[in-house]
Image (tube, rainbow, N blue to C red; front, side):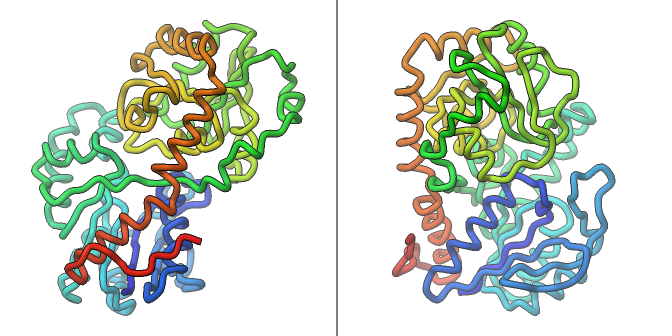
Length: 372
């Protein structure tokens, strides 16, 4: 079986979708009788180690993303690859190319609803866009043979929009990369902190939907006994005295070391479609203080962290204080076990392969899955 993924969500500093695609590419390459190809935008056409590129222009202020403008070249390249199933991971030009290629090749096409497009746009342009974008999402995703979404909250939204062939397909985490064993006592001195300061961390892009100002207001309320370290691109420059930042892209190994050496993750985003950084922190043995919005409550189950009211620094500061009034280390250990059991890539990706097998062969199980 030849699986082809096509997505514009492929940039040097991109987040969850690229992580998913790379993890899937590595895992599928170990499966017997499965070939996997990634088809993504690049500066030049090429193909190496199963990752193929077609030229697309850089998006202005687009954090390194490239935006394909024409369907034709992508339809032709997909036809040349002779896939048995196509998965498309963005809602713009490429899904229409994938659907056309699927019709021409008579192969199933899966749409993975990674991003809540209407909500992301409305946060930037206003709610006047909601009705039009909801209509577009409904029109597009009803055309796929199957739609996958990473959380129940996204599945429910798609069903409200009239998309019926939709299933939950969670993302995962590499529990070897993100692991408590990477704890390093040298992290606190590097940040100028003593052993008694509670070290909080957040990682991600500093985009509007992450609600970074809420985190900064939370830290002003918590005071000097707590310190927050922000990791990621486009973080604010003006910070309270108990907040620091690591600007720019941080590789997974440095991030894993920081997570394992911190006391808790704080996350004020209330429109996450999944929340991969939450899983990475939990896999590192951290409890989480998040908000009761988006998909984060599906990950932060009882005993692994606490949830606050959305967009309330007062509520979030109260939950941080409450977290450290309990045995936060025991909560971190439970968070680690929860991720190992439910969200390790070796547990998540066989379920994805089942979707492919059901569509291509009419059977749900793929024999001889290899997780080593």
